[in-house]
Structures are given as structure tokens and as C-alpha cells.
Image (cartoon, rainbow, N blue to C red; front, side):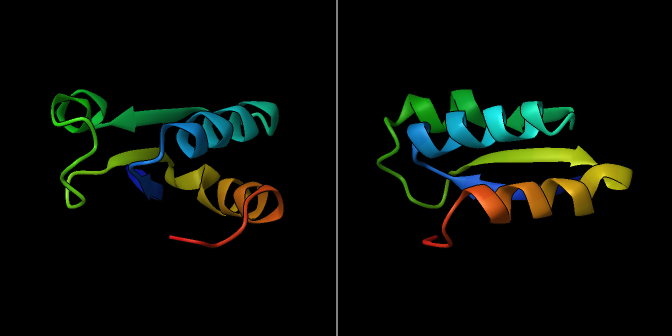
Length: 72
């Protein structure tokens, strides 16, 4: 099962989160990137979502919390 650990329309934040997870050894999958990009991020309810395996969710959340401020 996959667990969502981040949802954003910010491409910089998304790229950074993917790098943080990769550096932490957590395999992540980004969903809805093409759907969100179709509208140029103009539709706030269509966000890119980062998912990780359920077993890695706690590690992923800790890595993201340590590296990224809570602003969304």
C-alpha cells in the first residue's frame, strides 16, 4: 500500500522533496504531475502527490519535516 506524504503545486518544493526522500533512501512515486501541469498549476485542487510505501511512511515524514517548513 502507498501512503501520501506530500501534496503541492509548487514544482520547486516537489523537486526538493523528491531529492530529500531519495537521499533518505526512500523510494517515492509522484502522481498527478501531468494532470496538474496541463493547467499550469492554475487549478489549486489538482496537486501533485508524493507517495511512499507504507513501511517507509514514518521515515519519509521525518525526513521531510526536518528538511522542509510547513507552509501548505
